[in-house]
Length: 173
Image (cartoon, rainbow, N blue to C red; front, side):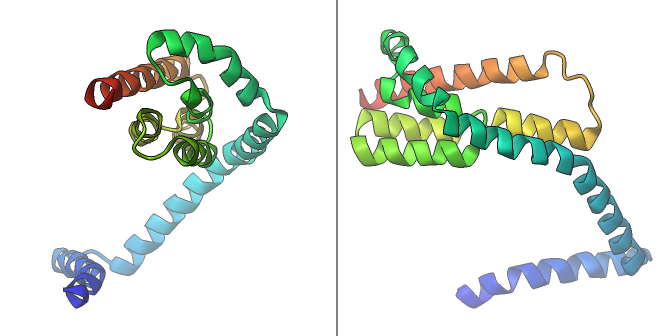
């Protein structure tokens, strides 16, 4: 079975190359054109990434997310959201790696079978790094004014976090 899986990628590439050859496509030119386009997209995205990564690091180092998490805990408790997930909810739209670290810490402290641990796992699995994705895709597409896209995406993140907590409470509460 393992050898069949090892052959999947070469077989897929071979089928694509055979199909292109049968259609009369110049494979070398097609690969060069794809590479040129990929490099242009990378050049468009790079400035956004060079701004975003240090900003995320500075925000995390400032301690602001932890402070906001402590301030939001009473409100979250009232809404039925485990207060320990506050930091995760604040970090997830900004940074996937920071959110993963926060979720790992929650699961380590509360346990993987606890309501809080399960809620953290569902939250991280069903949400997106909104600001990172917006920066990358808007830069790649050349969007200069996002208008309501980012606020709408952040509202969707909030709905995701609340529904994750409520569904976990229904299933395991």
